[in-house]
Structure formats: C-alpha cells, structure tokens
Image 1 (cartoon, rainbow, N blue to C red):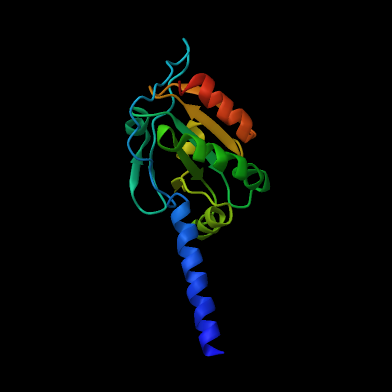
Image 2 (cartoon, helix red, strand yellow):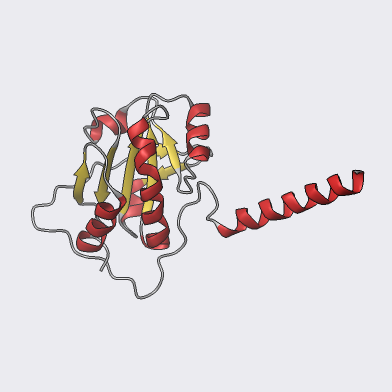
Amino acid sequence: MRRTLAALLAAGLAIGALAGCAGAPRGQLPGPVPSGVEFRAAPDGAPPAPPLTLELTDGTTLDLAGQWAERPVVLVFFESWCTRCAGQQGPINDVVDEYEDRVLFLGVANLSDPDDVAAYVEENDITYPVAVDPTGDAWLMYAVAEAPLVALVGKDGSLLRGWPEGVTGRELGATIAELAVG
C-alpha cells in the first residue's frame, strides 16, 4: 500500500512538473523580440498612450514606455471579482500564446486585494505579468470606468485601440495583426 501511494505521488509530481514546463512561466516579461519581426506604424492621428510605471505582483517595477520602445503592449484591466473579465480571459490567453515575444501583455487590477489577484491569476491560467494599481492612477490615465477594459498600444507608444467592455480573443488577435504586428 505504501509503495503504491509513493508511486502515485511520484507520478503526480512528475506530471505536474511536465505540465509546468509546457506552459510559459507565470508573470514573466517576454524575451527578446525575435529577429525578422516587423511592427506596423501607427495610423496618422493616433494619440500617445499615457506612460505608466507599475509595480508587478512579484515586486519588480515596470516602465511601460521602455517596453513599447521594443514591442506593442496590450493592457488588460481587470478585477478579481469581475465575471466578464474571467469569461474573456481564456481567449485572451490564446492570443498571448500566439504573440509570445512579439507583444507584451500586462494585467492591471485596481481595487482587488493582492491575494485575490493571485488567486484570479492562478484560476484563469494567466502567464503574463500582472500589476495591482492601488491608487487607481493607471485606471484614471486610461479612463477605465469599470473592468474589463483592454487597450492596445503600438511599438511607438501610440494608443491604437481600446475596448471598454473587454474584447473577444478573435477580435484582439485580428486587431494586433492589423494595427501592430506586420
């Protein structure tokens, strides 16, 4: 009996380790932009995106202007209790997988407790970095009245598109291809 339990435990740990290796590590910034990737120029008249410096849930500080100097950025404003946010997350995760190192995706929560944000990230299999904006400054700068809101910022820092009620994965992917990544 003990041997069987030990074998089952070892198998479970091995499967868990393999499953963890298959996906992207949680909260990691993308790697270097792959060679040969082309980014689209912003349309004439596209407004500049508000620059932000946010603290990520791992305690590091992220300067968005430094990020969009290298690649487009998708901001996903959410709250841990937002059912619409959770409903859209799976298809957004598919777009994250599709654009890997070409686009930075960043989640931004405001009123959610950090422990609830961590649980939301785990439950919704979010692999991209997430920040908690306790002052609400980022939400104000991007005119987020309520979650969800998704914003696409071009490589040059131009605000290309926003979705005040969130977005489907299909529309987000198509818009990134149309406006941001060549």
